[in-house]
Length: 394
Image (cartoon, rainbow, N blue to C red; front, top):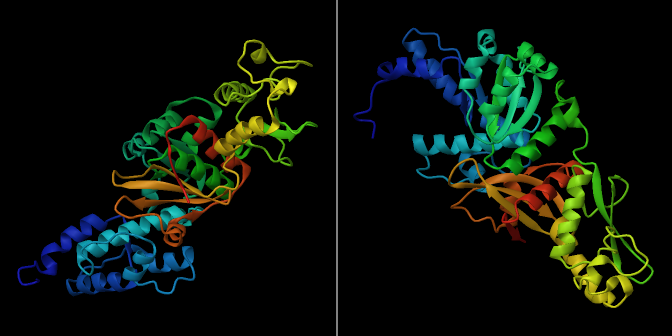
């Protein structure tokens, strides 16, 4: 296989060019880097680069695995590998592993430490140069200052366009960004839902100085349920209260009212029991023969409550086990958001050639995330907006 391969001195210049001002990522990086240094030393050339080791990162971000060899590690994480033990196959497997590790590193320590190691000149490019290096893809972007510290986190369906807006606006926040920015890193997600969840989670973890407004709750109103004296399930829109268990939450009262009016029509509910028509007798829909009469106790409790429960199950995902499938970062990839026993567990990406019906392997590729009310709101709002989203019940 090596009979006609080029000698090291023939490709040395190219290695210098492609690794200049870069960080070398390898599985057991110390071994590969030592070989490169030895070969360059033989040529009388000092080869000095920063490295990141996916073995060390895996031990930190995915602890307690039985083995961290590349083959066993990618197999346990469900990463498809072709041409194993060949340069191209192992390199591609390492790339996929590193992407998964970056995804699991919600604290962004890998990126921030890497940026801090780069030469200062790399942290002071012109704003136009920064924009040119960004993709027009859906994802999360991180604006760093000269020390590599994240000062702002955002999400967009077009990262390049959104960052360009930060650099061209004249608002106080935009001016602060323009003054402090040294570099912008990003993580494509393909899915807007994944981007929203990662943005919310990482703002809470990293607390960027220019993200104060987004640290606050994303919702103001919620839909609640209670049972009246006759046993009918009533609905009520109210201001969001973290002490109460809600069916679903809304960004504002207008969206909440729109949802409730549509839900009454879709599930054939009573306007009076849904809290949108105050009366001591029958509701308006009953008078025009669009309500079955729960408001005046003509419809049985069992029949009416069954439709209310259908609404609750559809929009609250309480006690459900399911995976929300959305777009991935590449054409042959999908994102997976895991809900277990009604609790949001986290998200991850999987290859289309790989089946996700093995819950143990699925959970190994999932990046754990907090099941807070903000994330619940994001998921519920997204499910309401995108009704044709693929959902796999477990």
